[in-house]
Image (cartoon, rainbow, N blue to C red; front, side, top):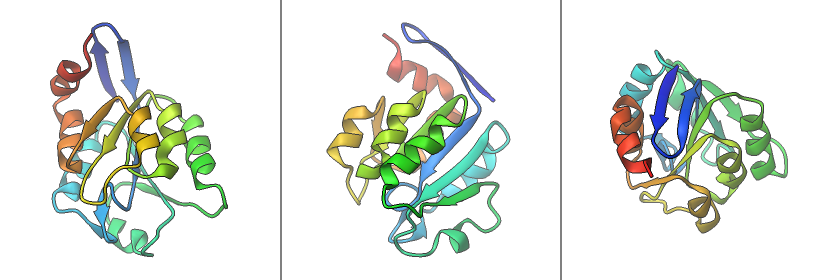
Length: 154
């Protein structure tokens, strides 16, 4: 569990981190260097979920050995499916970049948009609380929560 008290926004108790896969923690289906190590550290504080359409068909192989639950989307409404998944959890930070991440951003307590090499959908960007360029910087916000507080305080 991660506790954040952000001046002007209130206290947050985070139990779950929900991560999009492609474009967020992976590029062209391959986990971005540094992500696995950070996930290992964060898993001591919260449950970690990877939710994906698995465009490249690599999520199972790439997440083998990581303390994460993997949810592969199967419906014709990936945006809604991601939103429903997050809605069923309590105390959530999510990270993503795609248009299908918009609903999970709306449902999360805090949402971090990753505007990396794959870009970031405008609708998702507009629903975010924080925008970062590199997923490792986003994960580091959780490992060093004073950074998140400094960014979000009002």
